[in-house]
Every structure is written in C-alpha cells, then in structure tokens.
Amino acid sequence: MGTQLTAWEKVEIARNPKRKTALDYIDNIFDEFIELHGDRLSKDDKSIVCGLARIGNEHFTIIAEQKGRNTKENIKRNFGMPNPESYRKAIRFMKQAEKFKRSLITFIDTKGAYPGIEAEEKGQGEAIARSIFEMSKLKVPILSIVIGEGSSGGALAIGVANRVLMLENAIYSILSPEGYASILWKDSSRSKEAAEKMKLTAKDLYDLGIIDKIIKEPR
Image (cartoon, rainbow, N blue to C red):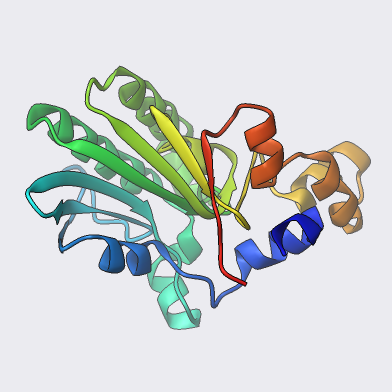
C-alpha cells in the first residue's frame, strides 16, 4: 500500500485526526510512564510531553510532541505546536537524561512551532536554536521517531539524534507543502505539486540518508 500512495496522500494520512498520537505509542511501548511538568521558568506548555519511562529494568527519558484528538484536546495541546516553554521544558529533561545517564527517546509530530506574537516575544527562535544546540552536545544515546507530521524547526528542535526512525506514512520536511507553494510559487493551491517536489516521504528521506529506518504501517 505504502509505495502506491502519492506524497500528498501521505501528507493527508500524517495529518489525519484519527492517527495515533505520541501518548498512544508511549502507553503501548513502555511498562511505565511518569509525566513531569514545567520549564522552571514560566509555565507548563502541553504541546510537548516530557517524562520518565521504563521497559523492564531499562529507564528512558521521553520528549514527545502531542496533538489532540478533538477540538478541546487540540486547544489544550495548542494543536501540537510548541511554544518556547515547551522547548525549554525539553532542554530541562535533556540535561536530566545526561545527568542520570538515561537514553533519550523523542517522538516528533508537529506542523511547526507556534508562530504567534506571544511566542515570538518570548524567544521562540532562541528556544528552538538552544534545544538543537543542547541536544547536539548530549553524550547519552538518542532515538528520534517521526510518527506523523515533522515540519520545520518545530520538529528539528527535538530531532538531533543518533538514530532517526520514521513511520511509513509520516512526513518530515522544512515546512508544510502549503507554505512551500506559497513561498516558491505564491500559490498555496499548488500544495499537492509541492509535496511531490519536497521529498518529504519516509522513502524519499531514507533514500537521501536523512533517516535510518522506515517503520512499516498496517493497511
């Protein structure tokens, strides 16, 4: 099925509100998960979930971008678009993982960092850059998994890893196809064409050496 789908069809699947979220995977993969909150500076932004997880006797630090399943959940999660507080929370747990020598696993699923005025005023660009910088220095093993949308710096901020895995119908790109079409051609209606040119599918990215492995998905 996967090889027959167009790039745009995979975009639609990656965005499907019924698609599994990060917490769905966390609940099914780990024997135990304890969510921890706050960036110790401002507040707890719920578009990124952080915490401690366990499989048997192995312990992990988890950083996961979380979307909602309905309007109420999406408002709570800011539609999976992190504010600076989320990235600063993530940095806090990156450093904690290093201190306690826990492997770090990140789940990527965002249409991008939140572009609102307040987020910019609080240093959105700096928070993303700092997250990338701190993540690149970590000495503990890091595994990043793209489970849905992986767009822009909002995704890359938690995507600097030793190994990057990607679900078969997920997407990973510098920005959305609509944004690409708007910038390049001044016409957002050409988003389907943009999706084909952007090389954003798992197969494209595997062939380019951007990701390390494709995780097959059921029909």
